[in-house]
Every structure is written in structure tokens, then in C-alpha cells.
Image 1: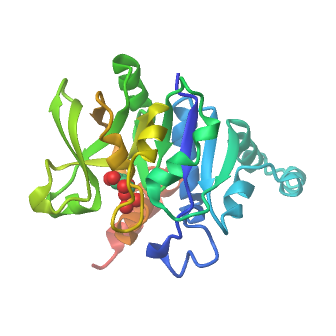
Image 2: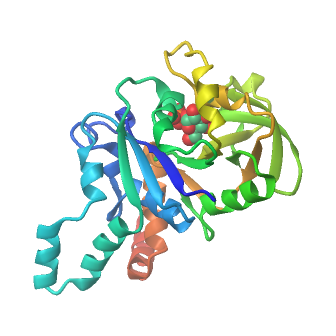
Length: 284
Ligand code: G1P
């Protein structure tokens, strides 16, 4: 059973400056919900009970967001805003939240290593990256847990990406063992398009076992001074990738963020009609 999800949130969010100068990038909303809440909701909707945030300086707004707020709750009660009240209370009650400081900027592998003392030696756990918002009928992590239960091995989320984009991702080589599952034989972090083993990119969802911590310790820092999770993953003998069903947005990319805002708004009853009418009338 996968109970724990590790969510690295220590990044500075420089792609979204100036918005991220004083506000954690994870708190920037898509419509009215911080991007980090989409990630946490995917995790709890997949059965996760414990969220471990790997945080850094200036990220206290995230801890506040996942805590009760008595003053606001009393205010909402007095104003009879009961739906809003239920919404903010429910989010906090659905999981327990832990916070670990990553006090050196040494990359994703190092961020995951910071959670070691909170993971059981026989426990498999999830890692979710905050920039990857996945809109799916069945939560992407839940789809992966199903594969993990079948294979009893680590599972990565994969998506096909267009040609030159491979250089932005971890890219895999592997053999299909079913229509959507691959047994992986190679993993390369951000290859040049000419060197990429395929067009299948790792999207920010992982199910890992405790062994990963040793593998990360065995991994050297790369030329940017970071420990890449992708390089540590290479040490697994049996590891699988799932081409999940769902639409993924890179919330750290401004164009994709804009797309996510428009498309997620169109999915909401309250916006569908007026927003569709607005889009039709736009003189482009
Ligand atoms: C990280 C990982 C990369 C993965 C990507 C998914 O890169 O290192 O392997 O493909 O997340 O979003 P980053 O986007 O942090 O540079």
C-alpha cells in the first residue's frame, strides 16, 4: 500500500518572476486554487494519507495553506459561507502533513533523500512534482499505484513529447509489456535530441522503494552541482513506466499555465457558458 507522498517544494520558481519574489511558486493559483493543492488532491484521491513536503526558505505559506485557520473559519461561519468553510477544512483533514527543510540546493535526487527518515524500510512511496498538473478522470498516481501493485516494482509516469522537447526531461528506453506499460532499460536526464533513447519523457510522478535512498547516495552530482533522481533510478533492475491517461500541464511554463487556466476553467460548470461565449467573441 502506498501511504506516503513526497512533494519537493524548495525551488525558487525563477521561471515565474516577478510573481515568485515573495510568494512560493506553488501558491500561485490556477483560477482560485494554488497549484500545490491540485497536486495534493491528486495524491489524496489516490489513497495517500501522509504528505511530506520538502521545503526551503520562504515557503511558510504552504504550511499555512495545509493547516486550520480558526479566525477565517469563525468568520466564514458567521457569514454563513458554509461551502467555503467545508472546502478549506476538508483539505486539511484528508491527510497529515510533514515538512522537511532541504537546506542545500542540490537537486531533485537530494530533495527526495531528505525524506528518508520518514519512510519505512519496507515502504514504497510516491514522489509528485509540483510543476506537473495532471487533469485525469482517474488520478494519474492512482493509475500508477495499480501498475505498482501488479508489478511490485517502482513505476514512473511517462508521456510522449515532441522531438526537441526531450532535452527538458528525463527520457527512457524500454520494452512494452502491455499497451501502456514499459519495462525500462535505460534512463537519461535531459539528453540532446540526437542522443535521446526515445520520445518518452518522465513526468513528475514516481513510485519508489526505500532502496532509492542508497542509490541517490551512490549518485554523483552532475555538472550543475545537482544530484539527478533520474541517474539514481538507473540502479533499479526492475523498473516500469506507465503512459498514463490524462492531460498534463507544466505549471512552471507560462504558456502552459495559461492553457491550464483556460481549460480547467472550461471544465467548471460556473464558467463553461459565460467563458465559452467570451472566447467566441474574442477578436483574434
Ligand atoms: C525533473 C526531472 C526530469 C523530469 C521532469 C518532469 O526535471 O529531473 O527527469 O522529466 O522533472 O517534469 P525539472 O523539470 O525539475 O528540470
